[in-house]
Structures are given as C-alpha cells and as structure tokens.
Amino acid sequence: MKKLTGGWMRLAAIGLLVGMAAAQTQTALPSAQSSTTTPGVKVGQGAQPADAGLLPTEDDLLRGGYGPYRANNHVLFYHLTLKVDPASQTIAGANVVRFRMLKDGSKMQLELTPVLSIDRVLFEGKPVRWNRAVSTAGASGVSNLRTFYVEFPRELKAGGVYEVTVAYHGHPVKQGRFGGFNFDEDKEGKPWITTACEGQGASVWWPNKDQWRDRPEGMEIDVAVPDGLMDVSNGRFVASKDLGDGYTEWEWRVHYPINNYDVALNIGEYQHWSGIHVNQETGQQTTLDYYALPEDLAKAKVQFQQVPLMLDAYEHYFGEYPFDKDGYKLIEVPYAGMEHQSAVAYGNHFENGYYGRDWTGVGISPRFDFIIIHESGHEWFGNAINAADRSDMWIHEGWTTYMESLYVEYRWGKADAIKYLNGLVPKVRNRQPVIPEHGINAEPTEDQYFKGALMINTLRTVIDDDPKWFADLHDFYQHFKYQSIMTEDVVAWWNQRTGMDLTPFFNEYLRHAAIPVLRLKFDAAKGTVAYRWCADEPDFAMPIKIGKSGSLTLVTPVTTEWRTMPWTEDPDSLVVPHALYYIGEQTGEGCR
Image (cartoon, rainbow, N blue to C red; front, side):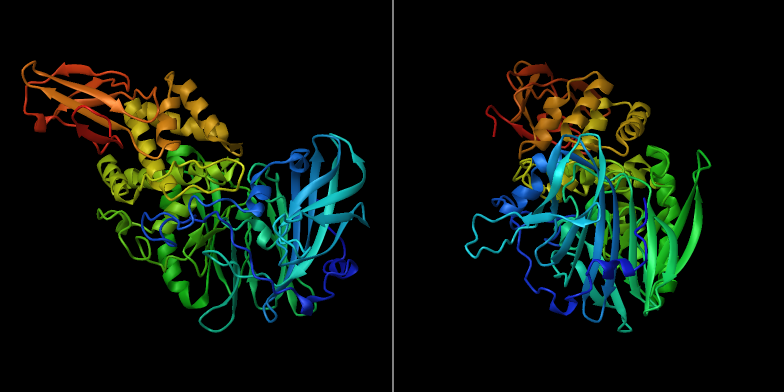
C-alpha cells in the first residue's frame, strides 16, 4: 500500500482537525436486528434476543443488501489513519479505499454513521461529490442513514484499480453490547479505549463498505494516541513513531482478508510479553503476543498459558493457524471477548469457565477459559472462513461452538466432548429457524451457537466413521479458507464429499424452527416397532441407530410412511442415543 505522505500533516492538509470541538452528538439509531456475538452475555443462557423477528430498518436494508453500487466493485485494501483524543472523546482520520471496478460505473456505496461528520471525499487528489442515502421515513430533510454514495467525475472502467479517500471526524457514540467505540478508564483512571462492533457494524466508527461479502485483501491501520499509551490493532506490528505533538502513532499491517467488524483498536497502558508456538505436526512457528493492563499482568501471565494448548488442538484438527504472517495476539479488554482477527479480545476476568460459571453445566467447562477457547476458535471459522451474509452467521458460531468440544476431545477424550456438547441442549429454544432472511442485515438467534454445534455433532454420527470425519473436517476448512461463503456452499461440499444427499438434513436443522422427531409405534402382537420421521423437510431421511443397548440397528426412517423392525422387548428398553443425535422422540400415531 502506498503510504499517505507527511505523517499527521496529511490530516491537516485535508482539513480534518477543523471543527473537532463541534463534533456531532446525535444518538445512535437502533436496529431491529440483534447482536449475540459472544453467547449468553446480553440475554442470558440460551435466551433469544428480545428483538428477534422484528422488521428490518431502512439502514438494515441498505447495509444488508448488495446493490449495484456495491456489486460494481471489489475492495482490495483499506488504509485507515486515525487520531484518538481521550480528553475530548473524539476521533479524526481518513480511510483510503483501494478497489477494482468489476463493471463500468461512476458511483459506489460506502457507509459511515451520521453521528460522525464526513469532511470530504477525495478521488485522484481532488474533492468529489458524495451524498447520503435519504430516509423515506424522515421529514426533516436530514438523513439518519449510514449509507452514502460517492460520485466519480467520470465512468470508471471494469478492471481498473482506483482509490478514494474519506476524511471524517467526530464523537463516537457508545452503543451495543460491548460499546461499539468505547472510551473507558482503567483502575488507575487512565484511558482505556476499545472497539467491538460486530452487531452494530464497523461503520459506527470508520468509513467502509459495511457488509460481509466483500473483504479487503489486506489493510494498514495507523493509530495516533497520547504519549504513554499504546494501540494494539490487527495484523503485524510495523513501527511506533513519535509525532512530536504529544502523540505517538502505532502502525499495523494486515496481510490477509479481514472482516470490517474484526478491525479493532485497543488503547491503554498495556504491558506486552511474547512467545513462540511451534506446530506439533509441521514445525511451523507462530508468534504469540500478549497485552494486559499493569494491575492484571501477573494474573494474565498465568491464564494466557492456555493459548499454546488451544493452538495445539485446533491445528491438530484443521491445520496451521491461518494468520501466521500477522501472528496471534490476546488482548485484555473491559468486555467479555471478541474474535478480532489476529488480535483476540479477552475479558473473562482471568478465570476458567465463562465469567467463572460452568458454561454447559456438566462439570467440564471449569477446566478451561471459555473466552480463550471460543474466541480464538473464530480465527478458523469466522475470520479465515467468513459468511457472505450475516444471516448465515451460524457458519461462524455453530462451527466455533463445535470447536469447543473438539478442544475437550483433544484434551480429555470423546466421552467428555459428547458430554460437553449435550450440556448445550437446554440452551436451545427452537422457536425460529437458525437462518433468517438474507439481504436485510438480519442476525440469527442464539440457536446458531448451540443448535448449530449439536447439528454438526449429529452429522458426525451420521457419517459414523471418526477417521473419515476428522479428515472431512480438515479438508472442509482447507477448501474454504480465506473465502466468504453461504450455507449453500457448505451443503454442496458435504454432499459431494460424502456422496449423500444431505440437503434435507441441513434444511431441517437450519431452515425450520423445530428439530426432527423420531416417532415410534410398538405392536406387541406382531413383535415389531414401527418408526418414521416427523419433520418439516419432506425429504428428511436421516439414518439412525436404535435398538438394544450395545447392539443398535441402523434404520432409515422417512417422513412419508411407517417402516418396521422386529421388537419383542419392553418398549421402554428400546435405546435411542440422544447424546449422539439431536432429535426429539415420541410414541403414537400422529406427528406433533
């Protein structure tokens, strides 16, 4: 990336610092969509978001859609430059957006909250026109939408690479579960400033193409903070530079595709220590960098020793840590945690479990730090593999929740892993489908975590061959690494890999609210038990093993007819292994 010249003089050159004292103080507009990134904190264990199912706002429709002025370009690189003033709680900066045109066009769509002021937009060094999307609901003539359109002075040709610079400033408004952009203080009263905005979107604090499908292929992040403070952001640390005005600039370089919401600032009086992790199977080395506040340094140095074991487990199943060029960082923050790429946020109070609680209630989660294991798992699913639409977020959360059980299995064996997973069952509500409507910035309910993981464990049982299962897991991840995908891509891969038609299986668990129910009907006179599936997906025909304990029989129920097998034992003695299949069970004639 070609650097903007002149350090922070470049901001003055485009008038960014003018008007800082007049920063806007609008309140952030609520969205009908919810945010449940780290499970359980906001609404309690297993509870659904209070606003689930509400209609999307105009902002959601613009952010969730992929209209012509998004589809006509692909973002190649962001260069975000920002100055953070803790005293006034304001920010000022610019983002250079490098992009390739995919179609001829003279307009592109970007986002920045109207709470922050756009100072100007530059193209080829000259100001260009831009305008905010206008709300159809507003009568004041002042737009309250994030979307704005950049109008270029000529038609840009497909295949051409261009840059546009958006300069902005203002007072970010604290919002959402983890603050969005949060000006806080540590125990000594010193500034402690963090960002976390998956639910609210990155455009609550910096201008970008705020959607999930199109990720930049890399990024540079330069953050100026008062002397004595440190900024820790994503990517590889490049340098720190004394700007001579009481501020120091911290420069970071991201070498991989990155989600907008993964981009993070962590500003404080951080203490830093480091290490090296060596892959147990390949010898590949990953740099480890840890950051904690001075008062928590001793506790952090003990608790963060769980990182190498976590990396051992996940690398065993999926392959090398996906961001070796950037390294792995674990950073203390004042909220629970977040999967910021190569800069994982940690706020679990240096305790095992989840805030000291037994997360699945079966005595296993107190053996490890839930936030380290869960949030770091997102480096593989959520960061390396990314859902192309927020509605398919189960690809992040369902797989990462399942990864928790893989960590347990790696450390303590399969029986404990199955026990851990089944501790999730009471958290599932089955009131809405896991996958909501595409294209409207809709997030699934918390069932995406727990039901998603239980579905994946059920798939393992259906495949019924653990060596093959683990090879499948590895190859599935490797196939989609660094890509943005949809559920349809997941289903197609597993169909091809297994030679089975798993489309009804995935549809039943993800696109319908209820789980499949195995219906049983005993006939003592005939010495049989009849079985069928009650399911919303007509073609659901998942094979299942049932029967005598220690000698189960593989059967293939369908939804359209009863099938039978011999059974002369007491009906209560027929075993349905619910620990391995996430299903319901009923006896009698009718479905539900």
